[in-house]
Image (cartoon, rainbow, N blue to C red):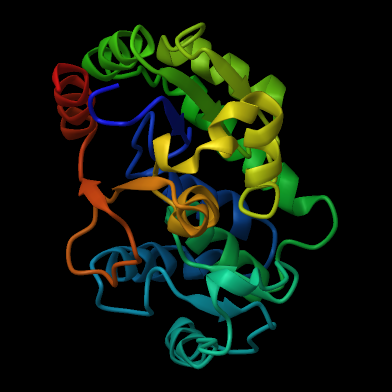
Length: 268
């Protein structure tokens, strides 16, 4: 290809669709029957501050240790002390100890972990409830982006790699109108730890020539960092203003901008 790209690797959540309100449902499910239901409004407001760059540091690692606090404000203050400068993407810090605040899903999960409310099967249960709520709300995909990916697929190999469970992800893709859009796809990909292996299984030629791969995603650690380390190009999908930026080659903010980027790529 004239631009040197042969394969485009896409993420699902936050990349193929954008949802700016699911954290509210997540917190509602998280706090149910815990005695902390009154914290709901404070957690929602706190998350909005994080997304605006006013609290915590996005695209940085935090320790998952439980935070004991009697009030939301005390909790938020102590949470800031969990920043983990010793952790770096190159070292793949253990997920049991650290969370990389790379997107809204990471933030709500981090809150749940540090509040001690995601023990046992509760983590998967709350995730599933939140995804089910997205689907029941009748969420639809972006037609312009869908058309742009289909157009890109006529020129490049298009790959979807998602950490979502296959059954829920396939149903959600169908609802979004993205069923059958990608050349290859894999779910429960265990990104970032299993990202390179997952891509290698789907497209061995991509890893043979990493400089010909474009990785597209909103979570810089899960979707971009492991491939960028190999020499792949990266397109960061970031809808937030004023947050800490991770290493990346190019960026877009919206689904329309992503569609325009792909269309321009096909025109080169």
